[in-house]
Image 1 (cartoon, rainbow, N blue to C red):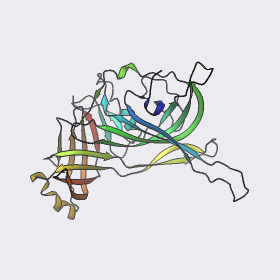
Image 2: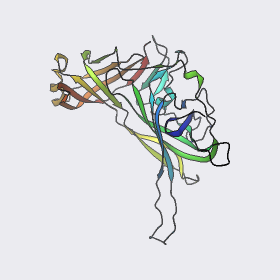
Image 3: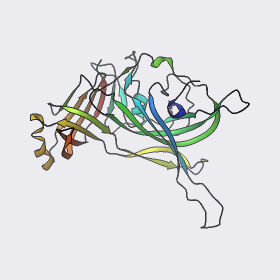
Image 4: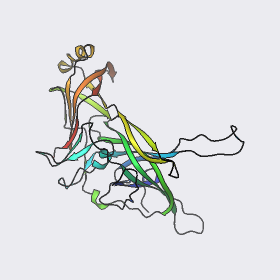
Length: 316
């Protein structure tokens, strides 16, 4: 029996109609399992008010319900660069859209005008073998109308570049299931991005960045539907406030940045090169500027607000 992070595995499928469940079947839908997921956790959200003490005692009436799934994955790419970016479905549910690149094979772009792709997800929890039973039975939560908020980050130089996902959607059903999901073979040749042999530039000047973290800042809300058993029609991204935090050594390239914090002058584009992907954040403005000590070394911590496009492209 395969082992999974937090005893959970999942599959994702793109929906044709927002909020209408599509059963994930494996390839080419995006799998979440122990091959690339570091942690996964499913939470149920209760939007109603129980009727305890207000109308009568000892009676509970559930209200509108939804579910959120938090998981962490690697920025990764398979050997076949001409098909798509392996992690594209995660980004498409956060407001990005995928296009064919000019010089590169594939790009993910966020320009604020994308029609957000919703997804369905099956989250299976491994069960335990009980006395007298030869099969461990778990359960599967079937979710629909999912949108994502996400962060991309690396903790230090040489560390992998990770994606942290906060997915929210409506509950379609919950069913018993056998533990027969196995890791997909097509991930065996995947290439994982890491923050090493890389470069970071801000408005064309090189920064000696020690780590970075990008947060899409999506606010996700559930659209109500009284005809649904759990009261939810789909999810919507109602707001986005993308920001990126970088920690850089203090030097000649950072000397002019303080003046641009007091005048609210844009500092241009921040470009981060990993070993697999190039990340471009356009039209950045410094929203926070602090100096700090990192093991006796002076570093500059910057928070940048992003008002332009965001592009992720493969560079191998």
